[in-house]
Length: 62
Image (cartoon, rainbow, N blue to C red; front, side, top):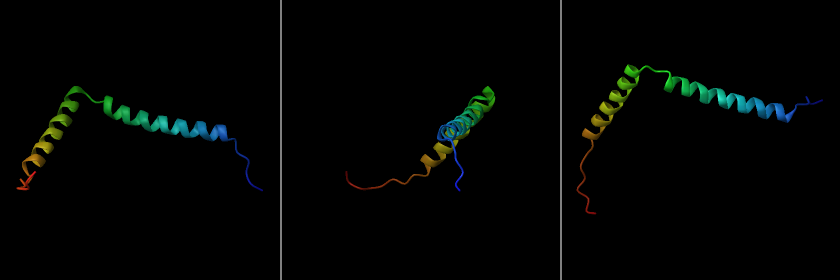
């Protein structure tokens, strides 16, 4: 015989799991010191500049 489950408790468990994953992402984002945030920002800018510098110019007519 199949196990009887309460759908409400399953929904609540799923909502709790989603909230926990969102909380973990927020802890990672907002739990950094100002120096860490600045270092991450500067690294992102450096990678974007490197990528933009490597782009090829195309001679396609508009």
